[in-house]
Length: 448
Image: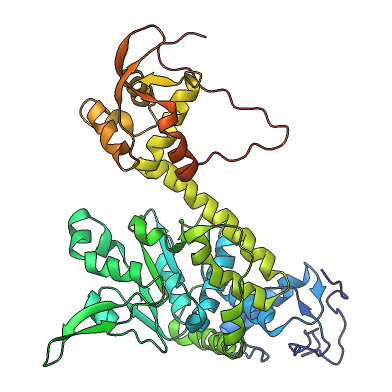
């Protein structure tokens, strides 16, 4: 980081009312100093009637404790300002989540440049976790917002245009997907949200007097907020923000639409002014990504925006991407039964010493004995041979008559049946250098 003098403490040419004030925001290529980050609000000096802008000045003062840098680029400054505004009104679970929200909002202003339109899934375990408040701030800063609490799929895809799609914002998404019955009723909307993640995935409808099929575009960035996880297919296409209730000592400022939206709208205008001329450049960028496959598709627009801004943002974006995608992969391991069964079967083989074959009955004993796993309550008698077969069916794995070292024959599984699925769906992380290999717990009924 470039070092600059500390905050001035005596009146000078940039003082206001005898108090030291920051220089005006530097234009790229010109000299000037300003806080390293978190200077929020518009570039104008705060007025007595603007609570939001006064808070911006306070954030700037706090930033001075961390030191100053030289002239920030236009992108660095507006992203820092937006980040401070989000932080003022919402308590996010981590700095990485704050980075992700900031970059996602900015990415909406370049929707036409992206091949994929990442969803922002704002979820929490209960009410009063700040989900709707975050959506309030996002609504006033994204490009061309279209917000709804409940809408039909046909109404939404008729609101999307090829040239300039709106940013879809859906609050109380749990009312659309919260139960199996309701989710089935809204299957068409889920399909639209899934298809709209990728460009050139139109939906067909018959319309007009001649009843000919018509194509309706689906591509648009979308944010959805609700209690509990959204459907897996939507979560897999999302930057996931897992909100939580405010803890003791955590404070944020109240949000008032009439008072606070003007400053957010000014930031929105500055985002558009910065990013609009970079459309062609953004289209051509292919950044190095710390993740692969769909996660890379989802996070690429955010990383490109960070690279366009420069400064600390490329590093912040990749750190957020790596940690948040890794966390969601862990959630899938624990929550997705079909992935969890692979993980637990691997543990069972390891606990038995990785034999070539393992009896089905022995494997079920291990799975049902784990009180923290879902298997003991999978049915009235726990996980059964039939239930195990159904969980493994999609991977092409099934039991068969096997001969065991003691000469007996019984239903069982061969270890090599699982190796390919393990490598594809739940690869074990490479052990750190010098780290001891974990010792597997013995199967129930064995002695050590």
